[in-house]
Length: 165
Image 1 (cartoon, rainbow, N blue to C red):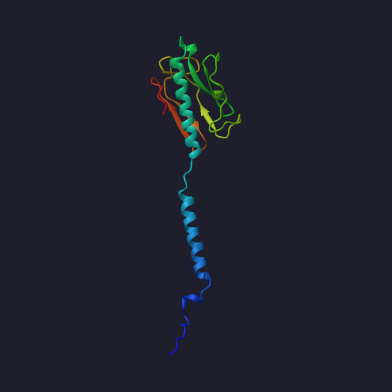
Image 2 (image 1 turned 45 degrees about the vertical axis):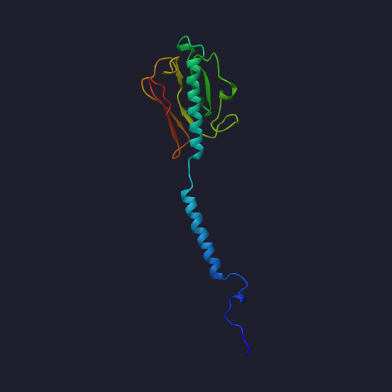
């Protein structure tokens, strides 16, 4: 009795069939479409907002710890026309460290800056209370806008307390 090989054995197949190849391509397309739709947006603006909050809190810290005598000595933050910001005294007599002078958000490069920044100025007295550019306490919250719509972020400095949110 001799055995003959089955004509339908699996060892005859040497590669993928066209149907298998098309199915893999379709599955990869579905997976990539799902990842594209769920990919997070606004990460750069979130990082810029965190950096800007830190700069505001640092300005408040400087005002509360550095030679405060009157409102003319208040420390604060001004936004320049090229979307950069500068930490300085309200009378402009002194600026913060070089990394806080004409600084762009999320960048070590000089202005013009890639991420738009608008709002301010805001200064802080020796108690950490926010002041306007004339040295008067602000009546309402000061809002800074970081980035462009639809991914813009708002940073608010509350009146009286100076809370940065």
